[in-house]
Image (cartoon, rainbow, N blue to C red; front, side, top):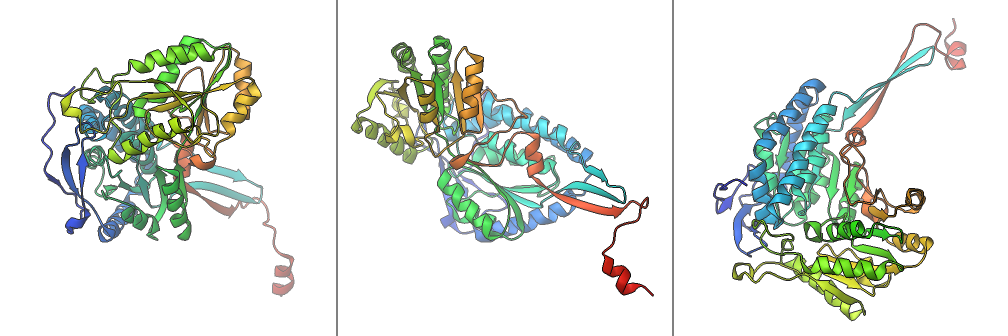
Length: 498
């Protein structure tokens, strides 16, 4: 870990900050409750100016040969990698997650995304058709100015997942960072701007929905990518529809991990612990529903409960910390409300982790990792996305029952299947209404495979070559081949014959 981080200014401004102090907002360390800095946010006028600047940049960026764009993106990857420790440190401070997790997962993915899409920037092929009398070419063209709206939970991951393919395809992008965690994104964009031409990437920090809605509604913005809550995503989709532009939505999840009776129990328990509590449960891919066969239910609960009780909560800068605080007080209160609701509905708290006794953390937004048992599928804690360190165990008897419980959700992002029977895993996978499935492991996705869900988990795919295509539109060019006569409407001969 880097020994020190440059001191943050008391007031952080950007080129796109408003002159009105009412748009300022504090960034708080959720582990201590202390203000890290105050950011001067943008407004509708600065958002409009950012779109104009992005359009000017696009007018030249789009014509840059793909090989040159590829080279610049690879240089972006190198520049970000040089600042990995600084970015991870910032993320730890503003989000609360453990430093090592921020470095390896968040910043590591950001670096890898620019490397991956940089390698693809010059490899998106055109199509050629020979139809005898006609030739046709289908080429992919960039949309233009695009907007990426980021959440607070994985800022570097979502920055890389949206920005790298967008730029690789020849677009420019305006980034709206999450209100709670803008610092890592703002710094990453500064680093990228040292490599890229001016205004190819712009970051506009702002609090609340006004600025992102203004960006999405701007007619000069041609495509949008949003990650966040389902309710906010629906609002983005409605605004995008009003100006007839595509929107990719990566939204919520209430993901099931199905543990069959023939499983490797120790491995399943380890996966459940990670899937439920990694990143404080602030993950759309969290395995927040643990469906466990009745034959192994009790043993599974005993082993998992023992693990939950040993989870160390604390400051993310402490290397002993496993789980940091919720991102802010509002999130903490919401998660605690779900825990209370679970008790009222009749669920049993099987285990909880211990909260830190460190007096420096008493104003932090901590929630003890909590495992519920005796949960029925209709309870709120089993149906609604909690987005915190809370998981529930639901007992099942048959394969069909497990599939039914898993699919009985408005969401459809991921599922995890644990069984030694590979044919069973494949059979069940075909029946689950989700976008991604993991066999006997959690969320070890391969960069280059589609990331995205179904139903209220959103639409569109990220992290793969299909993403590159989604940031482009097809243009078909038709021309006579000169080899055969081109068919004509019979009236041409009748009406124009001398």
